[in-house]
Image 1 (cartoon, rainbow, N blue to C red):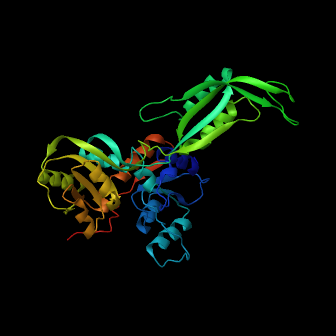
Image 2: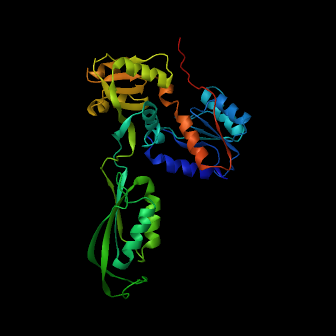
Image 3: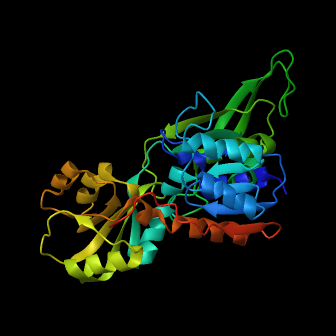
Length: 364
């Protein structure tokens, strides 16, 4: 089995189109046409992780964090990034990173955090905009039904918890085939009027290639009239962070104990206690200071994230309890989630979960 088949499945699971602009995701090292011998799943891709892949006979590493964030100008063993990349190349090991593509997926990093805490009624905290597109096309009435069904098959027409959504208008189209044309209906050189359906259907932007492929396959006309526009509508299922609710409110000390036990962190950094029950929670795995205003606006009683700086805690403004549980701690369950997904979808190669703790932060 080729690496590209794994890459395509991961991209369907957490489309790279929705990764943050600053990020470096996808196949970072390696040839997608190589065969898979084994896959090692990890949170980070350090030199030690590459050694683990070698020792376990894996030639693909699927990691959460990318080993390369910015451009490499010199590829010598002068730092931990270069050493990991050099060793991977020498041993023909491919490296794939999923990072903020999985952060922005509804069933991704933040959903895992919510599951660990038992939160219900989950919603995206910071929905992405300009991720929804709309196709408008015009097709003879006799062909409209089949085209719609084929577009639905590739995922077009999904809005929130609804599928097969479209809007259709009957009208009359006109055209005249000029020299070199080969019209399906009507005669070349004569203006023809055809009863048509205008089909309007929305789709997620990463599906554009599939949508256009089906359009051109199913449309009978020699020249297909269509328009695609990007909508400003927020995507309910794509975005950073998530909110959820405990079934019953708990006090702040109970909340802190729950976090320490769930995430195995020896210390919590938090803003001033507010002395009120905790029920609605906002979460954002990794560095989430930028989401503090959104967490407050969501009406959350507490916001769980990591990498908060000194002045970030002032932003609580006595409106929300901010809790920094640690970067590694907030994302530690991601590799288990990725391992389970790959293991469930592929049976023709070994999938190995890394047993190395790559947390660079130590506690005394």
